Amino acid sequence: MGLRIGESGGQTEPRPKEAVKQPSAAPTTRNFTERSLTLAARRRTAKAAGTRHHAVEVSYTARVPSIQINAVTRVERLEATARAREAIAAAGGAILTFEQFSNVSACVGLEIATACLPDLGRLLTAAGLNLSKRSELALASGSHGQTVPVTLQITFVHNEPDLRRHIPAIPG
Image 1: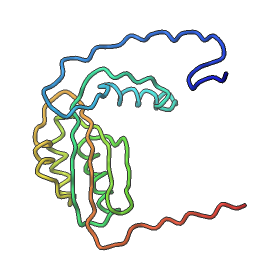
Image 2 (image 1 turned 180 degrees about the vertical axis):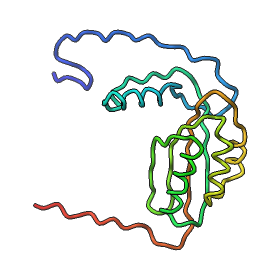
Image 3 (image 1 turned 90 degrees about the horizontal axis):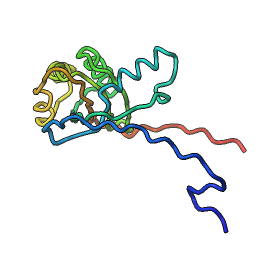
Image 4 (image 1 turned 90 degrees about the vertical axis):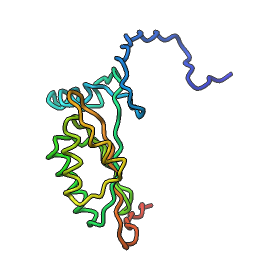
């Protein structure tokens, strides 16, 4: 009889149970993402120590509301992306992730202090991005004290064909 997935042939030591921290009182906002309030600090500490941030244990200690921003632009894709990056940096945000979907859209994941949200909205609009009404309302409500994860979805409006990527043939 063979072993099933997840079974081992011998005895293994049980993993010690880690202490689970209870989340603090949840805010009343409906859109939640479980994030550690100290995630960015842990990444900076790991970077300063010369280790990779994925090697640092991350604990999810609090529920923080996340904000989703949708923007549309007719500005050329590379220029609009550069302007958005500069606006995020000028507002005091930190870009965590970036995904590009051909030349149709781009998704930027960032963290920013809630007090800087109105500045971010103003700078993105000045950069040539047209924000949706829902995004403008979400950015207008800045409070003090906590960092919030933000997802910025940029849609590029143009008449260009999809990007073509040359994939070299594998020898053999």
